[in-house]
Length: 71
Figure 1 (cartoon, rainbow, N blue to C red):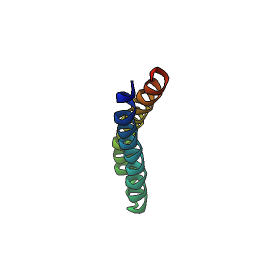
Figure 2: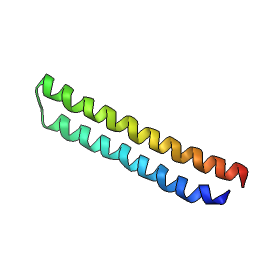
Figure 3: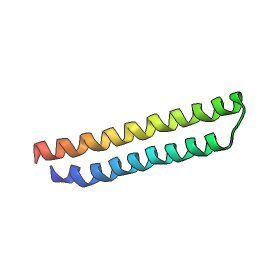
């Protein structure tokens, strides 16, 4: 099952890059000093993106672990 390891690692890496991107966007939003409603709207979009990146990273990690256990 080694064919699961490398794609899983790539998917996990894409998820981690997405998490870092969310951190960068949140820092930019904080430096923009927006009012409360605009900041809330921007952070709500970031939360959705953050959860998607976290899920993608977890799926990739599960693929790696399954590939190691079955290989």
